[in-house]
Length: 120
Image (cartoon, rainbow, N blue to C red; front, side, top):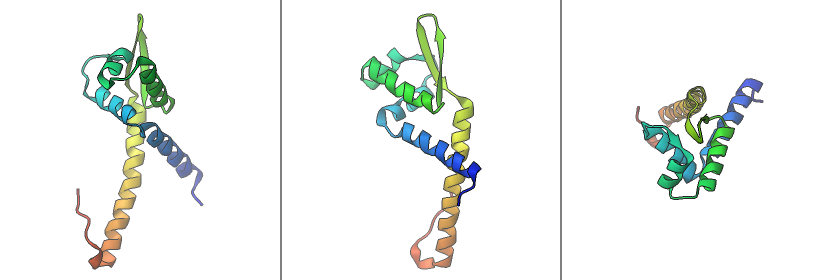
């Protein structure tokens, strides 16, 4: 049985993975990560070459898992990362994949004919 805290962590991580499970949402993350200026829905829609309503829906999905946040300035809403959520997600994913990597390394040590996993 998975402890309650770990279960909650896995559910939160799965929700973020679901939100990131779309090419346009991954592209939004990429655009936000590379932009130096403020980014609004119109800018994102142009870069994604999709409609503003479609872009808004993708942004709502990312906001629903708190991965991004918005700030209204005049008639425009600008989007940015929620630093706390990004750090939490990275920590959860790192922990999960480090456990998997360690398991692979231990399995390969026990069975040398299975191949090797290189250190990163």
